[in-house]
Length: 181
Image (cartoon, rainbow, N blue to C red; front, side):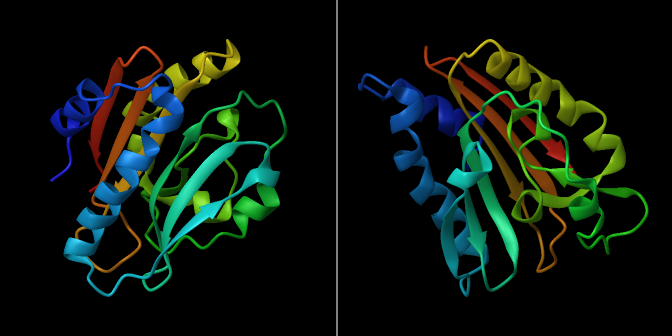
């Protein structure tokens, strides 16, 4: 199972010049392998959204219709949310859940593939701590790799947990794991 220690070992073994750009190539197969282990019928695709103004990539399971991981370099954003688009996104998980952004709007996150059922208390609580740190880095034009990985325990689109991680260009790591139940 991937965890903070796994990421620390990967960072420690890195010997290149640009960890922010290079490390996703090491992480993608690990994320996919772990997901395939519990979802052997998964049909994973890589989705880049370069026209969104951000540099985020999503690994998406077409079979289960859910995002496996979102990652990229945050870019500070001042544009208005498309509230009508967000309101049109299905929310079948119940009233305690929000349409949570994997990548916050303030760092270039959009809607659709970027939205997942997230407990309201998590969305406006502890999940925001690292989101705000990432937003502040983006506002200061500090490059980092940020990823959010929903971790599912069943076949629904409701993640059981979320993994949030920032890998700084220095190799420093900020990591958080959150229960979504």
